[in-house]
Length: 492
Ligand code: NAP
Image (cartoon, rainbow, N blue to C red; front, side, top):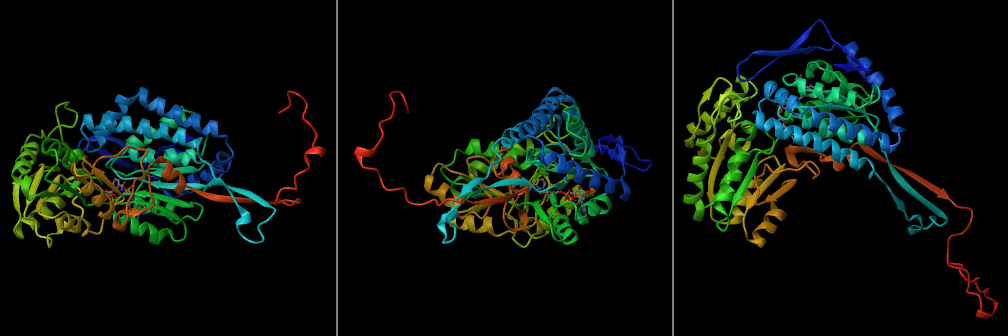
């Protein structure tokens, strides 16, 4: 791990195992309290210096780190595919997005601006001029999950560094290797000591220590809702960005391009074996197109090749561990016992859960309201858009939703009425680019990611107001033409 500019090891280690067969890939240090304490102390110092670094330096570090990752992209992709849940093709996509996230961060560094304020809008504000800038918060603690072990770290590190903060990353203990490689890329890119540190160790010990420390002014967390709530209780009075779970609805209207919709929905349902906050969980299909769409979805799910993550032909890998797969199995069985029918899948082999489609799932089933976080989607018919929207909103999540339609009115209504942070038209809920605002209401979290929006969360406005000694007011009376002086020729 990287503390105070030095790569450190410990005698006690955390084993990193390949979720598909349990083989040992590597070990990482299990940090103790003294190491986290040193990292925080160094971040305070690093943050003070980095705040004063000129914008071009921030930009250089980010662009260079992006370049290092791009050059070594295959090595990064293999690390993601080995330690995590993604196939090699999915992992390559994540690496490309990480490069993009860091480049956007470099670009946004130059646009981090405030604005001038019209003080004379209020009595007593005459003779004042001023503006605000956006100042870094100081030290940011970044706590990240396993599902995008590289790009979700970049989504915190890039904006934090672009905005002039110091950042300490505490990656998920199951997938720490990609995050450590990211830190290596920043070291190679010349990031100064203390600007980025990475401390590996259990969330419940060193993670909680970082959360509780008052010098860490903001926690940027992506992960499960329960952990997020616990962090906010533990951390008390500080700033939080919380990127939590979802239960994404996708609505298919009768006028949609059904073949195109089926393809997008299958990809959104089974990408990263459903361990994705944008996973298509509930598919609302208009009755008129049910008989066309549902067989295409079933065919798509059955066509998915599940297996070895490093095989170029594999479409879907395992879940992060057997326990996670068993949890999905419990949810599926609960739905089946309450009357749901399984159209395809529904079976588990160790950490692998087959691509699964259920229909007739009653709202009393836990899989209907909770986040499944696995490769299972529910299909439900509707007749009126109102009913689909109401059902889509009837969960305590709101990250992103989607509608397939060619009808502008239906698209705009969905955009207005779906209670989600993002509504996607004619792509599945899984559509995202790294520059867009990302986050949602209700149980999906607090604040927004997406580089520019994360930078806003990671900075605070600072006002400068000037009282002037001369009066800013109505212009002096115009001189008469006779007394005016003619400008010399050529003067402007
Ligand atoms: P999790 O268990 O909540 O863990 C996430 C991170 O929190 C890990 O690094 C973990 O460390 C750390 N942690 C655990 N307990 C902690 C504590 N008491 N104090 C500080 N840190 C602590 O994550 P998960 O449940 O596997 O993540 C899946 C969830 O993430 C899903 O709900 C998914 O939807 C959500 N997610 C959301 C987004 C988004 O952008 N909205 C993106 C991806 C995923 P250890 O590993 O060491 O325990």
